[in-house]
Image (cartoon, rainbow, N blue to C red; front, side, top):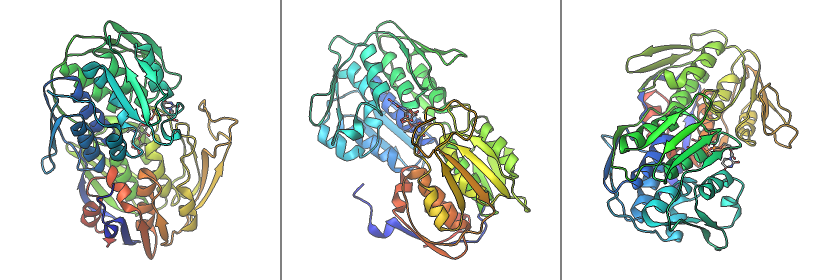
Length: 443
Ligand code: EPU
């Protein structure tokens, strides 16, 4: 966003010091934004607690305001209050300017169709919001009775003047966003909806809890089928967001990579079980306490692992990047097979420049069925360690890749300059303050 000062966008890091101390992690970015959109469904006031001060929360707040909704955020206490008594159609150009490359606007579709009978999703340049990355979303909306018109130059116009109705929907892949799309659109639809092949991430379960508090009827079967019985109206909710398990795992990986000791206040065990198993296999130690989890490097050598990213309850794709930095310090060959995104290893190139030995492969180096088999994507990585890292000039590529670079700079000997650092503000609240609290030498 344009309000970033150039001096806030560069971080100088002197690495080589273990990170040690305590930091607090608040609610999950990938839940909070959806819960804020859910508030649009009810003509009343909703209160969301444990909300982190991250840029994505500001963006969703501003998107809601563009739709005539009243939003206040008490950042110190982490409480967002949303009064959606009144909802208007926003100007599509304003939505686009605000949302940038975010896919959140597509999730406004269901609530806006229920409240206004129409929704407009921006589409500048075509490919960014082309049919492929949101094809499941659009198909879901069509099956629920919406008409999707892609003829407009500046966006997708979606209408449902007679309302949405229940439908049988199957997702070709358990997409998090498309599952949320179905939930947000079907809760107020006329009749029953059956969604098979759904994603069941903890953030989705928490969204279902929010919707249930609002008055929805939703059940989840063991075979990833979600059943939604449409109701006539919903009311505002009060809810405390589940902790951000991606941020918690990022700090855990930072502890491992820098041979440090970090207590992550707020981290919870059930959502992190798969990560904790891998953390232990590598040789990391952790202790689950009532108010958080302590992660530390016990000294000696770390061990290599073979992991495959997957949908829940598998190993999250978003955990992969920070952990790869720690794996550069493990003794032997580690393998990471990325099965969720076809192109999520670009961040390894700067790591190689810093001294890591990482080889990428187009082949599936694992046993999980993978959509990228026999295709031209470098989606498997072999990491050979331990390799000393040395400080470099780094450009942040994306949110998780960026945080990984930061960890690498902190683990490296000598100074690094990390450019484009404000991208990390999208999902890591006050990470500069937290790094200082952990003893990092940053400027
Ligand atoms: N996909 C399609 N068509 C669709 C939707 C998805 O082909 O219509 C594909 C995607 O291209 C991808 C796969 O399905 O290969 C999974 O995508 P999914 O829809 O599950 O992801 P998402 O909802 O767009 C959320 C998180 C991501 C996280 C993924 C997977 C938010 C805002 N984002 O994305 O988080 O990686 O689920 O867990 O909730 C992050 O926090 O840095 C981040 C990228």
